[in-house]
Image (tube, rainbow, N blue to C red; front, side, top):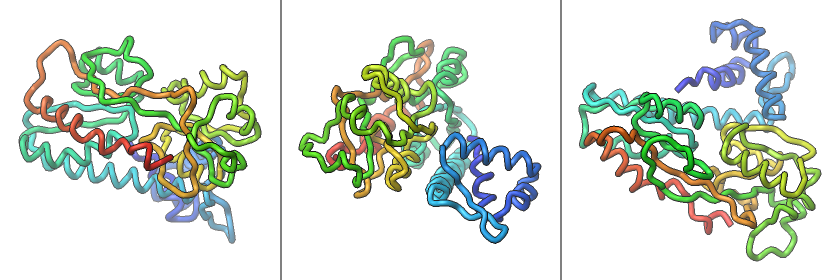
Length: 307
C-alpha cells in the first residue's frame, strides 16, 4: 500500500514549511506545493494557513492529519504482522472497502497461529482494478462492495447488506423537526439542504452512484460540493459542521455532534467476498474466508448505536 502521499501532508505539518518538507522528502518544492493545492481543491477546504512565516493546520487540516496518522499506523501494523509469516503458501488479497484493513489487522494474528508458513499479500485497489485482477488471475481473494453482483467475476459469497445513511451536524435546523423514525426522503434533502455543502463520495464508487440516483430522482444538485475518497473522513468533517454527506454505516463516526438518518426508500450496498472460480481453495484461503465471515459483523456497527 503506497502511503507516500500521506507522508507529504504529515511532513508539511512536521516542518511547518513546504520548502523544508520537500527537502526532507527528497522532492521538489513545486511538486509538493502543487500536490497540496490539488488536494485542498478536491477536499474543498484549506488544510494549512501561514502565520509568522510558518504553516499551521486549519481545523479541517487537523481532521485530515489525524486520519492520515490512523491510516499510517494501521498500514505499519499490517506490515509488521505480515512480515512475521514465513514464505510458503502465498495468498493475494485485495479490497476496495474501508473496513477491510481493520478486519485483516484483527484476523491476521489468528490466521498465522494456524498457518505460520503462509504469506499474505494485501493491497487496496479500486473496484475496476479488482475486477480486472480477478479476471486475469492476479488476486486470490477480494473484499468488495456493490449495489448488485451482476457482472462481478469469480465466485461470490455475500457477507451482508450495509445501509447508506445521511449524516448532518446536530445543530442543523432539520434536526429540530419531529422525526421519531430517524428517516429522510429525497424530497427532504432537496427541501432542507439545498444551500448546504455536500461531501460526496469518489467518482464511480457505489455510494456516488446512490447519491447521483437520488439527486436525479428529485432533479437536484447541491450548490456546494467536495469529493472525498475515504468516507470515514467525511464523517469527521460533518462532526465539525463542514457539511452533510451520505455514507455507509461502517464509515459512520459515533459522535454526539452528528445526527444520522436512514434513507427512505432504503439504500444499501452489498459487502461480499470474491474468489477465483476456476480452482479449489487452498487450506489457507479456506481459513481466511472463514475468519472474514466470522469477524465481519464486528466491523458493521448496529444501526441502534448510530440512530
